[in-house]
Image 1 (cartoon, protein in one colour):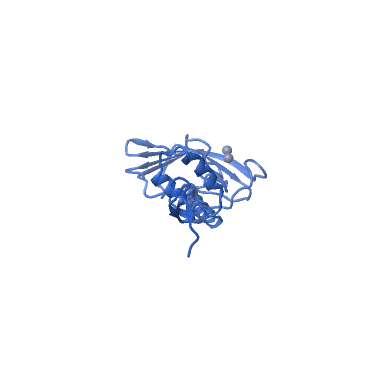
Image 2: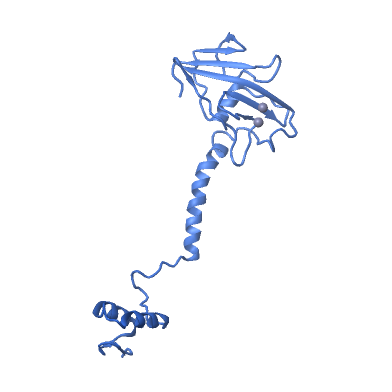
Length: 202
Ligand SMILES: [Zn+2]
Ligand SMILES: [Zn+2]
């Protein structure tokens, strides 16, 4: 037999873990109820284990699960540019430090009659500054490399994650050339401006 308690108000026999509910259900407006509840809540075993409305207890494994989901989500955001799309180029350690050269080429792109905006922050992520990157949305490509490597306009498109595709026209330093992604940005003469015309760029 379970030990039974008696309700201090109506003296009916009640299981200890049901006494609080009994007071709430049967004597909701009794003047002694609030005081009795306060005392009972202090006593162990009064609050049934499965009571709804019981405060949610967060366990360590639940925190771990949430952490895994959040970190997984961040990874999904930050890792693809680094892992997929060709780990394009080794990250340079720090802006402007130990560079073999630092060059700028201004890129402009037209899609039909519209000009395409080239966003700031291409090649720059939390974990990596790539040797080809943009610091603003003017189309200025910064080439900052710690190795004696040369980079092409196609390399910039790889960092950007866009396809060079099939431009209908290409101008290098203002001169029309056969469109091709292997034009080197820094090199003999140096490429200061590139314009690409597409029927439709996406
Ligand atoms: Zn830079
Ligand atoms: Zn620069």
